Picture 1 (cartoon, helix red, strand yellow):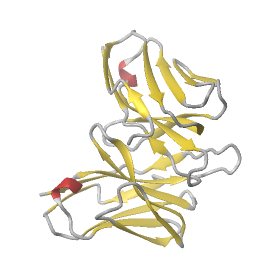
Picture 2 (cartoon, one colour):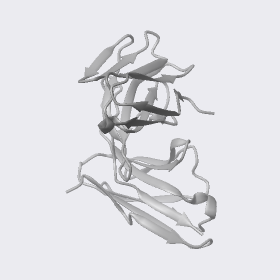
Picture 3 (spheres, rainbow over the protein chains, first blue to last red):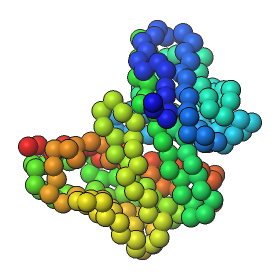
Picture 4 (cartoon, chains in turn green, red):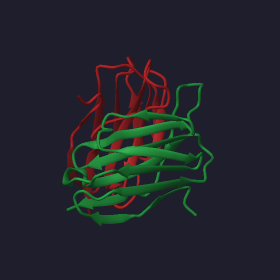
Length: 116
Length: 113
């Protein structure tokens, strides 16, 4: 079984609809992240969470919200979807090590969201 | 503003050729990682470098971290079609929020048989 799972894998919705993307992990990591990927723009951070009570905005948080329901679950919501939120969305977890400043991130398979 | 600049953005080569991908910044990094992403999947870590001047090799892939820890390169020798994918560099910056990574825009590599 995959360590980081995302549901749904694909979603088509209409402008103005509320959408929730879900992420679950079995790696036991405290840190979880939501990224958005657009062609030619790489990965851009939307929100990140270092533990259940800690939520932080990333570089492109406008129009998005998140909920950390448990250590293993981190969901991303689009309150009122718009077409320019059409993108590939990735959830990731990390095993940040305080020594050596390393931060390996483990990604889910992605959710392809289309907003019409 | 992109903290990490990757070049080239696209690379299309024949099997057996060598190639180098660059990742540059004006910022100093505490660590630099390279990920590879295949269609329909999330990025997967290839390597982490943490020491200025460090060189790591994974079979035909050679990764180098610049002496000043502001840049990195990925060199592939005798590329194969199986090397096709999106290569992403990502850096952890000293003084930034611990655990955050800043990603480059990626290099899409296509290796033709």
